[in-house]
Amino acid sequence: MKQSYLVLSRKDNWVRPYFKKYKKLLALVLFLGFLTFFCGSALMFTSGFLISKSATQPWNVLAVYVPIVLTRAFGIGRPAFRYAERLGSHNWVLKMTSDIRLKLYQSLETRATRAKEEFQSGDILGILAEDIEHIQNLYLRTIFPTLIGLLLYVFIVVAFGAFSLPFALLILLLLGILIVFLPLASVAVNQGRSYRRKAKRHVLYNELTDSVLGVGDWQYSGRYEDFLDHYSQSLKAVRQEEASLNRSKRIQGTIVQFVFGWIVVAIYIWVGSYFYQTNQDNLNWIAAFVLATFPLMDAFGPISQGVAELPMYEDSTRRLHQLPIPSDKPEKSVSEEVLAKLTGKIDVKDLSFTYSNQTLPIFTEFDLTIHPGETVAILGKSGTGKTTLAKLLRGDLLPSKGEITLDGLSLEHLEPSMSKVIGVLNQAPHLFNTSLYNNVQLGNLNASEEEVMRAISQAGLDPVIAKLADGVQTLVEEGGKRFSGGEQQRIALARILLQDTPIVIIDEPTIGLDPITEKSLLETVFKELEGKTVIWITHHLLSIEHADRVVFLEKGQVKMDGTPEELSMRDKHYQALLALDYV
Ligand SMILES: Nc1ncnc2c1ncn2[C@@H]1O[C@H](COP(=O)(O)OP(=O)(O)OP(=O)(O)O)[C@@H](O)[C@H]1O
Image (cartoon, rainbow, N blue to C red; front, side):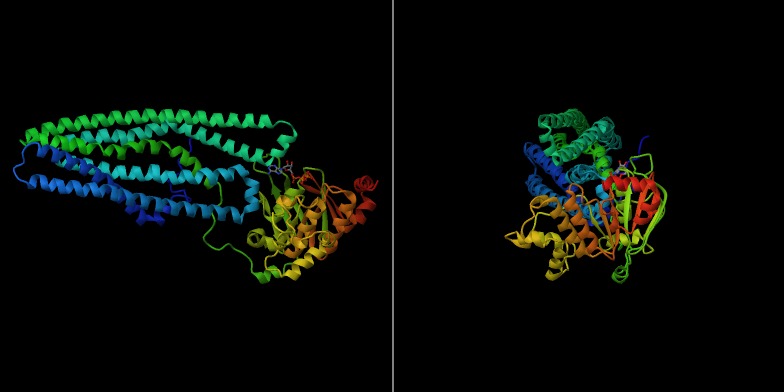
């Protein structure tokens, strides 16, 4: 189905609003652009007139003196207006793109975790690296030249209309080919190519970011050459589309010059006959009119190429539109007092959720209530949706149906302050390449040094720090590689303790740790998180005695729910699992 254009349409709320916002500057830029070409043509007109007049023995010195002055004035005016127009248009565009970048940042920042779910890194790189630049070019290469061209078009047709209506109609037609017909034809011809080039470029970005993130694995598997080959293939495909677009541009350029040639010939013939009929010295005017036509080539020539790029801008605008628009109004949020009083009660009611790229639901009409201060272990086969549930609880994913409330408050209200409500200790916490101290302090930037040190100590890091020459100021290095897996988890735990949220989600932080380190880490975790609501996503029942309640998920529903003691007494499946873990 053919979609209607979004770029410049009323529905566009990423780019279009800037027309209104900077409308005065826009009007100035268009006026300066018009004056630039006007001066260019007028310069050639007066020069042509001057040359012709000088060659025919002027009757009065004023007949050449006035054109000399005008030639000078237009000669100075053209570059001066050009310069001012360039300054104005770039100023306009830079203002707009800086606004769009800010808007993009706000859009991603407020929903960073959700954006990570919805977009690949390459998509975001594509938007930052290409789409915004394209939109910048939309103005510089398409909108400004087209509007200036249209202004000149109207001016020229009206000016010729003052002399001769039929000739004005002919010019209307010939220039119409350049301004209307050719641009539309080139959009029709190049639309497919532009989309294809754009799509291939995005594939390239996604493959590149994906491969760079997994470059180690390419190396380990000995398939580095394959990676390079694959990348070169994608690059070649993009280049082929670019070559075909360039070919089409060259053809367009030739057609523009051909039509322009006809305009010059038409003007030559008309001026000759018109001024001959009106008994004027036609020699003076032929040179003036014909020469004045040439600078207009610079005004009308680029229009069709600029308009031909519309499909590319359309694609960029559409991609921006996939992002949520940050609202100007403050988000509905809850006050600090309400946040301070949260007890950590969680209510999941009638929850249904399906990933947008999947058909089978992960949850259907799922209900779960977790009481304040409860430690609930969530178990289930791999792929049942334990991590998905955690993401839904944090608002990183939105339910297809149903509602999740924390202390009776909807996630929509809590989302702006989610970092004060739910802390997450997951399988791979990110440690930034700064000191251990700074990494912990990230949990609460307002915390005092004493509070940070206490959290470090509570997380059981004292023996680790005692062995470090620089103590808490030791750099964790990129991704925390200076420390072991268990130590990295303790640093992340210290961060969460400092964050001091009423709810903490623990998503298998002990994966990859040996059983002794795992047991010791879990003991620290549960001891220090006592009193908070803890949702512990786990695969096995080791250390299950820390949980007040065990919930088994299966096919989007709760299959088993009870205290570890109850389940160990009555549930055969649980007993079997317990036996497996404690053999
Ligand atoms: N971003 C996503 N897009 C589409 N499907 C997804 C996405 N993330 C997860 N899934 C699918 O949803 C299902 C549940 O995934 P989830 O990670 O929640 O399971 P899990 O119970 O935590 O598994 P595990 O114990 O192996 O970590 C899986 O089948 C997974 O393939």
